[in-house]
Structures are given as C-alpha cells and as structure tokens.
Length: 533
Image (cartoon, rainbow, N blue to C red; front, side):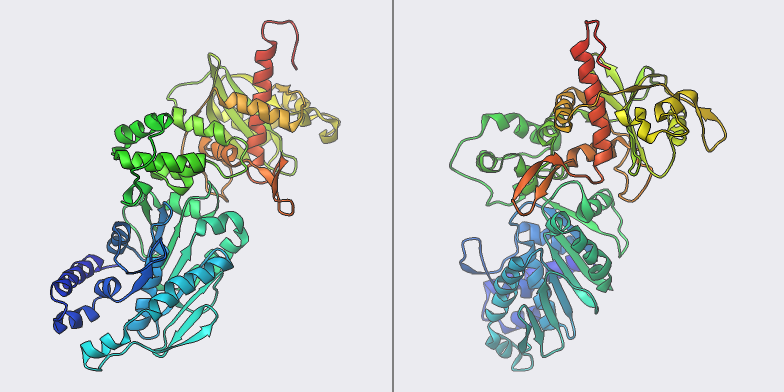
C-alpha cells in the first residue's frame, strides 16, 4: 500500500512537535489529517497489566505499518499487540473516512467479546471529543455512533466496524482475522468459509490482514505462510509475509532465574547460524518460558520462521522424534548420486492412496531419498514409477494386504500379479518382487517407527506438495505426514484416544510404519537362522 513510509515520517515529525509544544494548535490541526499521528496521539488502550495508557506503537507495529501490503500475513510470537493495532487502525479509518466498512473475525465468541469491548469500544469511548472541536473551531467532530449489534458500531458518517466469528456478504475495505492458525486447526470448515467467503468480500484495493501464532503444518494459514515466505515482489492479491519473533519485544527479558544449561547449545545455534544475538536477560526469560511450555515454546515464542512449524501439532505421535531430527539437522539437501540397493516400503491403498518410501542403508542408518503417493490408479502405475526412477532395487516391502486373497484379481494376489508383471499405460510390462511385512498391532508398529526415526535421515527434494495436488512426489510431503500423524481426540471425554486418526497423513505414515517394522525385525533377527518374514 503505497505511501506508508511517507505517512510515517510526516506523522512522527508532527508527533514530536506536539510533544515539544503541546499548545501549538497548527501542529494538532496538521496531525488531524495524518493517520500515524492520530493513531499515536488520540487513542488510549489497556496494557498487559490492565492499566489505561496512551497508545504508542511498538517496534513490531511500526514495522508492519511501514511495510504493509494490500494483503498481509503476520506470523508472530504471542502478545505483540497486532490485533490491538489493527483494530485502532480500523476504528480510525471509520471515524475519518466516510462509508468505510471494517470487519474483524475472531476464532471464538469469547475472543469476539474481548476484542470489541477492550479494543474497539474502549478506544472509542476514551476519545476526547472536545479536542477535535477545539482544534478545528467546530468544523470537525467525531462521528456519533449507535450500537448496530452486540459487537458492532455504525457511525453517523456511514462507516461501520464489526467483530464476529464469521463474515460473508457485502463489501469491506478492511478485514482482519485474529489467530487464523487456531481457526484452521480447530475449525477447518470455518477456515474454508472465511477463505471462500470473507476474503472475497474485501474490495480489490482494500486491506486484508491475518495474524496468528503457528498451529502445525497443515491448513490455510500454514500454506499461505509457505506460499509467501520467499516472495520479494507481490501482486495486489498476493500475501506478503511478516515474521515477528519473540526476541524483537524488549519486554521479553528477565533479571530473575537462571539460563537453562540444556539451552546453551540452542542459544549458540541462534547466534552462529542465524546471527541472533541474545542478552543474558533474554536467555533467562526464554529459559523460564521453556520450563513452563516445553516444546510448545517453538509455537508460542518462535526465534526463526522455520522454528514456527518444526514441532508438530498436539497429539502427534512423533513430536519428540522430529524435534530431535531438526536439532540434529537430519533433514538435508538431496544426494546427488546414482542409487543402488534401494529399498521401498509401501502402503497399499484399496480405497485410499498408495504411498511409497524410497530409502537406502548407510551402516545402520536409514536414508530416505524419495517419496511417492497417488490414488485412483492401478498397481501397474506404481510399478512403472519404480522403473522410471532408474534405481537398482534391493527389496520392496509391502503390507499383508498385498498377499490377501480378499484383494485378489483373477484368483491372483497383488503380490503374485506384481511378480508376473502388469502392463502399464505406456504399453510396457513392469514387475517387482515383494516381501510381505509381518502383521503386528498398530501401536507396536508405532513404537518401531519411533525407534527407526532415531537413525533416519531425510533428503528433501523439493517444497511440500500443494494440498490438492496428486501425485505427491516430495520427501517433504512424506515428512509432513509423519510430523502431523496424530491420535484421535475424544471431544466428549477430553482426551487423546490411543489410536491414530485416519486422515491425509495416514497413507504416508502407514508406509513408514511398514518400513520400520521390516527394518527393526531385520536387526532383531540378524545373526540368527530365523526368518522374520
């Protein structure tokens, strides 16, 4: 949105003049027509301690104001005040621009009440209406308001501001969505409604802003962040990413407590790898928060963008294992070599997708070099995929389904058909010999995955595949499946059931489970004459 830097400079200059000479009417009059001046002079807010103070933008809010775009997405640490800032900005536009329509969407009813009462209503009612009369000799007055609904104002100049859990219909000049990551995680259908309905209500050159802490590697918020993170140029309808880490807030420092010895290596990595230099006070503050939050600190108070999403969602099976994988740096660039002795592990989909992991052994380590997932195609398609890779294969592992007569075709199992060869869409015949993985309990298999992940390396061959694109061809997508594979949440009981949720993560995760069962049983039986299969 052009001109913000100029507005900021002019407004700050006027602000300083008023502070130096508060009796100068001309400075006030000039400031009346400057948004940055108005925001930092006319409005009161409640601070974190509940005290009423004049609003003064903090460093993060200043940065956002200067660098904002038509569509902004803010990935942030907690309590940086972006919703407060956006609501003051929206209220100010309603008061000084005729027929301006502003909407804020919150993730639940409690948040709706809090945002409207403590940010919008409080700021409006704290205005000194007399000062506007005095400055302009009665030529300008703040528009009167009536309560349009429980959480909305309609002003006498035709402008409106509303806070709700959803919004669809009409045209708005400013739409702000608070904690969109939480909405995407808890209410995916509601998130879809916001994207397909509320987004479309924003005027072509209106302002759409989204702010949230990270809430796992899934949903619109994560995908919007990933899509915007590497962009340097932005079309009007594209999101611009703004990342605000915890260490950018001066208040996040402590004179009490001790620096956690287990975090010293982490702080060293921030300094030497990311050039983030923390004071001892900041390290003490982080140590105290880590003591309370544990691994959730990466979501609530991220230090870097990549850190926001590196710990998977609550209830995930392999959360601790992937935290260690990231700490160890065991996700890296693709290996540039011709592979031999490649193994594959499959999850065979009858009504779902089929997923294939490609990996090699280096000593006792598992090095994942490829991933493939597709659906609505036959076994011959996947055999062709094996051939097209150009690898020399050692073993193909498949679940017991492949040797199950229930899924037999023409009286032959899928394993038998694969061995004899199947004609693919290109007219050629492809074949493969499969080893059937023993059938064990799912929870026992998950335990094998946890053991395997301790010695696994992943070679990322591209960005995460888009949610609706098939086939899935990146290791990054397979990793995403594993990180987000979680238990079923029991809404009535309020606890995680001890069985996996069946969703988009299942096929990739099941395939890696069969890989892990096969590999761990091979180690267990190595050196003996017993055949685990």
